[in-house]
Amino acid sequence: MILQQKKLLIFLKFNNFHLRDIITAHRTVEDIRKRVFVINERENSKILTFYDFIIFKMSVLLKGSAKVVGFTPEKNVRIRMHKNTPLASSEATIELPKDRVIFRTVLRYGTWEIEESEFLAKAIKEISSKSNKVALVDIGANSGLVSLQTSNLSGTNHDIVLFEPLSKHTKAIKHNLSNLNNKFFINEFGLGVEDGIAEFYTQGSNFGNSSLLKTLVPSKNLIKNEIVIKETAQVTESLLNQYESIVLKCDIQGMDSVVLARISENIWEKIVAGVIEVHAHEQIDIKDIEILLKKLTRYNFLSWDSQFTDTITLKDLRDFWLAKNNSEKNLFFKL
Image (cartoon, one colour):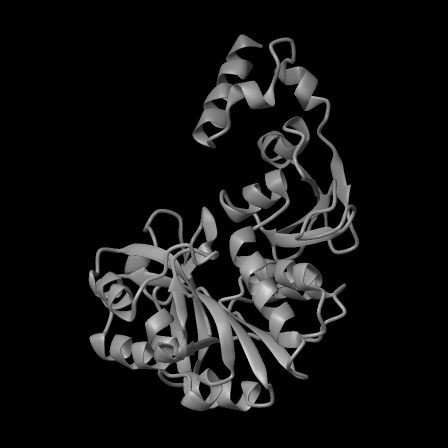
């Protein structure tokens, strides 16, 4: 038993769990082992291994916000919420890949990127009172959690247009957004310079870190997929021109300047607010930065802070981008 406990401690420490949060002094490994259960859902049936069980039951032992209730054929995890959160109501299920970042955060806290979602929701609320046809555009949607959370917070009748190239994620989006009253449109491709097929890299321990740029994804546990890429200007003009107003969320791991610089002026004139993950990596092209900065001149407020406590200038933004020091920040902007 002592050897088993030592193995468990090593495993938990390796996976960044703290013993005091997980197991009391009187709880033995066998006591926990008795809790192993069979998950049986329509899509899939699976008996959890002991170590999988330890990971997936952390929220129960920690009194978290959700628990694992199933798996999908794509090896996504289904979790059921214990309580109402901005992400989902109590007893609702969320689907997402199992990783050490997004999965664990949602399991423990029941939210994901709440600051960004609150900012986007506020912008949508404000513009919905003035415009008849409003869209939340989510470029780099992952499992659709930010779009879901934003839409729950705003409570408005807007469309959701999502761009996400990985089928593992688009399957999760379909599940996660299915109970919304909003219309949503999933585009299972990435945006880029031209149409084609490209290699796409994902960090196995963090499915939120996926990029066309291999240098931005750690080599350990690297997952490689081939994805469809469509030329940005043409496809965004075709899909987004119907809207009067757009609120933008863009999180595409270093491709922000490439894609956003290629969205037409016509579409940019419809964008009233947004949040962009700005990545100052070494492969940035200064031409893309200069084009994008011109498009951003129409916005009165730029900040690294969603409350705009401290605003920044276009020069500050340019300097950050072109530092090429691999830093990243969220840029919040509005008219």
